[in-house]
Image 1 (cartoon, one colour):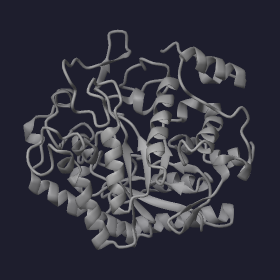
Image 2: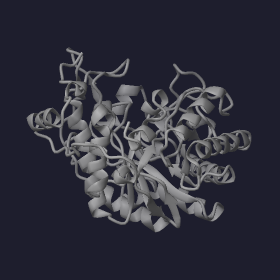
Image 3: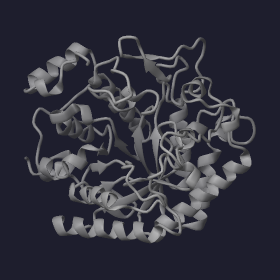
Length: 426
């Protein structure tokens, strides 16, 4: 177990600030959280002729609890009701919905197709109704569905059998996950996957969602294309080719589902894959020379250069994208930068750095892209480890235009009223 000082021990603003200073990180916060519209997190924001009622956001997540055919189960419905009950006004994708069988991350992942769309629409409607019952209106609620293909991390038939479909052969991830050239998808298969994305978006619109989140994060297929320097052909190599996957999906959605808002969850930067050290802590996998496979990386494998990230964000605005949900790295190979935490996942490694260092890194990365693209709205992630100080940091971030929304994930399952409690001063 790590010996980092726990946030729960930092009871006063002075103690929290002293710990931040000792770490030598840039992490600002408001000493006292505020209530209602006096809180930056309680303020409305206008977006595409709509009003989103506050700055809390529920991040998209999976429950591994849908039916085998991809329809929502009672457990899925219970989770979605907790999203509705949270008081957050931006629900960013609700669930990671697979666009096709081969792209399911597990055999119980939600899947959107002709056979599941009615059940998904019914669940969305129930969620809106529940939110209106609690808060008087759902007119300021903005709800999306995340559509995805799990790519390298696909387990469509059995949990223990990986059936990877990858954008390119990655020398370290292939070694880590047992992949080889036979897992690389052809251009013809890419085109088929793109058509499934477009079809999924059209069905999401039919189900009543305000937007779709085209997932480009965490090493899944969309994200992997952004670093496909070694892939030959029209989907790899140059920046133009590596972003073609997104462009063709967005073009197809605009044609087949006009009026549907397009967004995406994006890993702003990536690092080398990590593995467990002898002492249980994480260490980067061995690599010599320049590391070209980290989108948003500086070539060292453990540094940040978001030049291409900024270029990509500027490009997607041409396709109507005005809001992006940010994250970094991947939970599969460097979770300490993606999800800073005091305790590792069951099969993971101990964090090699204080989790607040990782939280500050994400917050400052989002602030940088927000500075470069002031007309775009950004959701920040990676706040969980802040615990009691989460609202204080979130208020500072929003008030100082470092992000527009504060995103939270699985904590809302155990504490559904967290956003409302904050805004009511509880």
